[in-house]
Amino acid sequence: MKSVLVSVVIPCYNQGKYLEETVQSVLASSYRPLEVLLVNDGSIDNSLEVALSLQRKHEELTVIDQANGGVAKARNMGIRAAKGEIILPLDGDDKISADYIAAAVGLLREQSEVKVVYCKAVKFSEAGQKPWKLKPFSLAALARDNMIFVAALFRKTDAEAVGGFSEDMHMGREDWEFWIKMLKNGGKVVQLPFVGFYYRMTPDSKRKKTGTGRKKRERIDYLNKKHADFFQRELNGPLRIQRTWSREYNNLLRWVGKI
Image 1 (cartoon, rainbow, N blue to C red):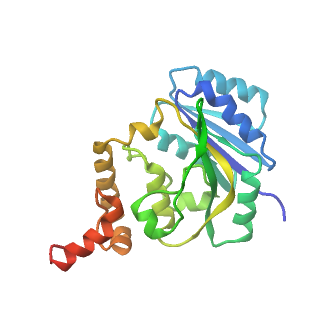
Image 2 (spheres, rainbow, N blue to C red):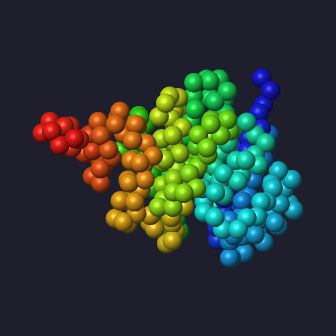
Image 3 (cartoon, rainbow, N blue to C red):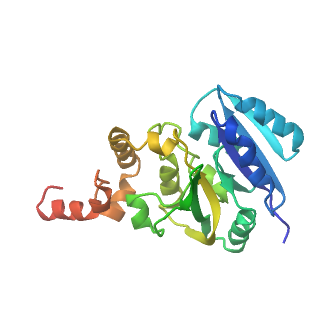
């Protein structure tokens, strides 16, 4: 079977400090053919300079420069430009293992019903690293929380079919919404049994910025408006602020005639 091109899309905003390490982890992959699309999202540090320097050294790397529009817009820009059949989004300060892409591509090519392949992961910082305890995937679990980090592999056609990442979702966790719309109407998800993804924790990590109570409420309101059918099916009503108890709370309200 002929190998397919994989496009690794790296959005970057002010991550010049880590960008070369991220790119080198991709280029060290055992899988070929690869293309790396580095989308500079209006960075005000030296990210573009670093990206262009890397482009001069590595023919597999292409730099796209855009005005700042947010990570969803940057990912979509890279996906649109991608020539590969399979996409791997990777943020500009994270890393992957050398065997991750090859194992994921094998599954996607062998099993047409598989839509998304991810792996086990660790979080790391200058202080060290620790396992990222991801919950097992199911649609019912996905309705309550996201357990698939953004650096998973999927077919470009499946991303195009759902309109890519939602560029109007500015309150964080846009990858959660992306997986909901890609998977809610079917498709198998596989987690590889090894650590293939390394998520960098920094003082200004996006997960920290989007973890406030206000952002959570905005996010839940957005998801309920956009995917009411999904939450109705999986939770018997809308997603609640206390997400874990959403189905139980909705069932109680139905029992007392409140919804």
